[in-house]
Amino acid sequence: MKSTLMKTALGILALGLTATSAQAGWTHGRDGHRHAHQQTRAYSQQIDARQQQQMERIRSGMRSGYLSRSESRELMGEQHRIRAMEHRFRADGVIDAREFKRLNHALDLASHNIKAEKHGRQARYAHGHPSRFN
Image (cartoon, rainbow, N blue to C red; front, side, top):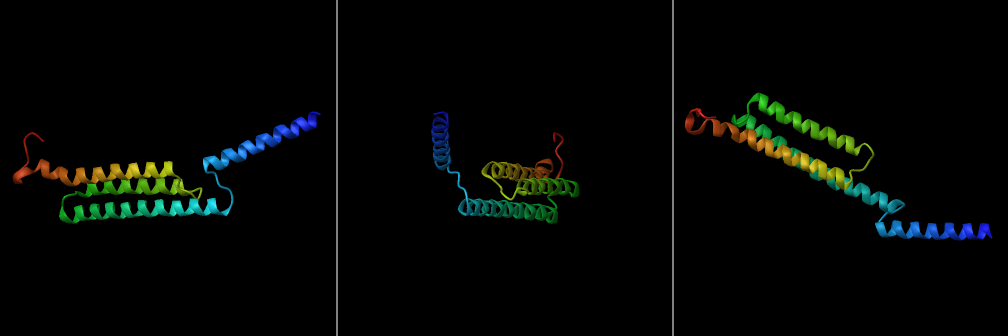
């Protein structure tokens, strides 16, 4: 009696877990693994493209004189920290949506910082001479 009741309870529990995992979109096997790696590749490509654009903006600011050496060094350090964050997230082989969101936010802040540094000198030296109030 006890073993039949136990088998029934375990069967119901297993059925519930299977239904829950299917409903939650948990996949087992090769297809889920392949999808995770395709998603990671897509995230990585977006992150890499944004970092390339930001690095080019920093280089452009250096060439044009809008960024000082210390400003560009600080901005390059920020890019290095974002790259290190990406490597930490990728250590398990997958960048999930939460990690991508954090990287994307860090890149948004970096983009804002590049713009602020490149355009900060124009505000300080408007019309060819430094302002008394800046």
